[in-house]
Length: 150
Image: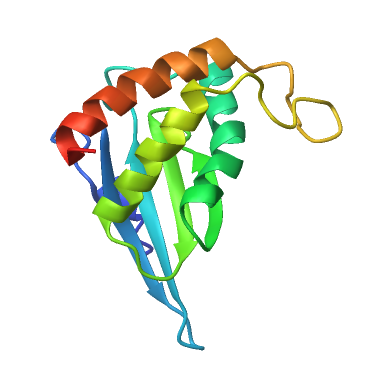
């Protein structure tokens, strides 16, 4: 049996970031629906977010996104540092997720501190940049507003 990793099937040279893309859908044996979304912030193979910025965005979005969209299982940074994966239970459209992301980025921009920045709650708490997170949030939000008319 050949395993297919969805993200490896996307031609990263033919996309323009930022974007929101539904990239996975599972119907569980009990009838639940689980969806995975690609929240792409920077252009693949052209720019990667530094770890301090992406780590801070991850901490900030962990709470803020859950205020905007129900049934989130996880928000995780991509290893390539060009965006995040959002996994949630239930159906949502790309438009709904994009609107929630834009509201979340507004909250990131207005944040005065990053949650859980300590040795007890984070495995690498020293590598955080609120300034970097806010700069990427501003840039991505501006572009998403043009795309999604938010």
